[in-house]
Image (cartoon, rainbow, N blue to C red):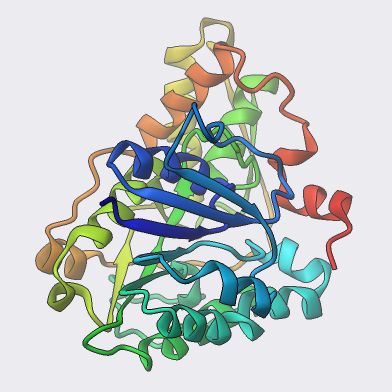
Length: 335
């Protein structure tokens, strides 16, 4: 019998890549999502017989009580993602990102789910001039989004038990192509700007930001479902080897775009001031040493994938509201 995985937020940017990979690996998958950004997942039934889509809210305790039993594992991706989206309605965002988190964990444990994987974020570190920020570094969040993502971590880990394995992942900023594309992420938006206008605007430039290719973060979630309980139980792992300044990322983007797209043989980089001070250089030595996880792809690969998707017509309208979390949430009227 196939193992059953519940993916909250499984129709989002990462979920739209993760869910097909889970199905391909033989898992039965339930996606719990509001589908606020559309449905870019495979069709159910004949198209993906192991897939069940549930349109619902993770704040709905009665729904969780009905839905959770029978699942072996949970990957929790659902959240109001990124600082501007959180700031649209802080009370709403807190209710989704924090208030309902422990009830969700408790519902999973009560339903005899065996493993719970939580997608936190490396932005919980805020600003640090440490040469390598390890998992033991103090959390210095600059925004409520960062703060509440971090505050959920101990709520999960305190439920660690022999029959309930918990693990926290702090991914770097994810980059690369997804059917539910996001163009409000550093690498992705710089690439699309270069492709559509031949111009990249860099805000600040000296801030250090780690990145991870979307296929690599999906590899990691699959690995976390497969490893022995003892390897990951109660543990927290950074995941992001590509540490670069924003200015360096812009140069990487320019180099790849000018090679991939003949019509963009010249791409201009313009630098302007920024009030976004987040800057940190994370260490992923723990996850390499303990789990053997090393990404296979680079920022260059992410930019190349985006270029090829754009040229293949997979991004027909880069201004589509669905590619931008703030604009999409404003359009949904979520409460």
